Length: 284
Image (cartoon, rainbow, N blue to C red):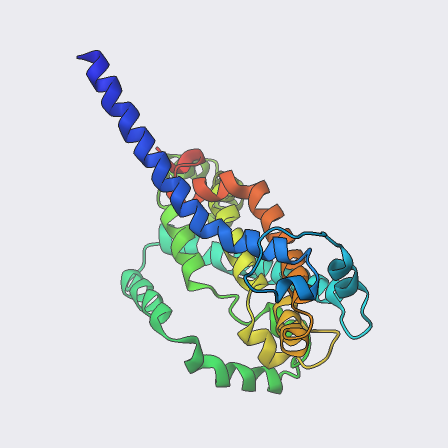
């Protein structure tokens, strides 16, 4: 009987791994093709039938995309990192206190207010595009980092995610602080935030990656080379050199993914724990 159960368990594990391998191939194959062709010459990339492995690998494409005078990949990368980091900090500063208020403060209409807040997620971003642009114009923030950092900092998803995590933290911990005379602010900063590092990290990574990859809004509010972000720069690079210098465009795309991979590898465990609400005191 035990051997039969072990046999079924082995078969289930085998099919599970097989499905994961097949799905991984579908996900990673385009990435492998992009990385491989970034080391090819333009003639090799345009050859038919297409080849996956470069015959004579070269680093010329990476050198060219980093040293061309009309391209500033290093500047665009810095702008994206600065804008994404600043926006992430703004989201955490705004969303964490709001989430704590919805999770702990009880006042008339709080549930209705939170429901209305969630409904705003369904509003398409195109609806608020023109008002936001006009606001940036009136504030004289067009073509500045302020226009890349502050719009969208009141993130409804961030409030929802943190509220759900804060509600899992035992009330007894705050009751003990109340006995010591701690107010809402002290309880929030001394108890809630230290116990919510996983949720805060998960939200920070979601916001950072989303803002780092954002193309539409930076394309609207930036005009000069000095304020362009990496997605905007890569779009311009593709439109200007995509047909004649495709490997150079692919090299730029590969370089743009390195910061994302580094950030995700470092914070992968905290992201998973924060989303599943099992990290720290949140997972009782």
